[in-house]
Image (cartoon, rainbow, N blue to C red; front, top):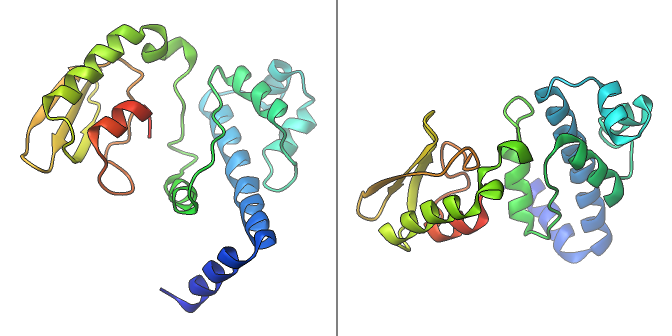
Length: 194
């Protein structure tokens, strides 16, 4: 571990104001980047997003500029509704926050809209497929999860090499590999798009 990283960790561990500043700085980059990525992915102009949220175009422009706006939940809720996605605000370990930031790419970032969210629209179908996967070899550690183009999810276990496929619909858009190391199948089934 570098001295610079060790110093930062020591300051974060020992000082609440340092933690607040660190979190604020990360969020001031991560949130605008996600908003811009979603708007561009949906081929919307800033004006179109402004119209859908009841904001001015200049406000949308500021929202997409890192550090230019202090976000409040109401603004984020309005944006989520305009993008036709949900919003989850949760407390996480610092390591998870850093992992999410390191894995983020504006070019690849997308969120399934409510219109295409099969797990929300047809929860029984999604649940049956997930339960089927979990019963296959519950508790095994995964090596990879892939969603081929035919809406099927392939899961491969490290422990014994079993491979299982189930139809889960378009809602199961998990990353092509299990980011951040190996995770338990049951955790992935419960958490959805982690």
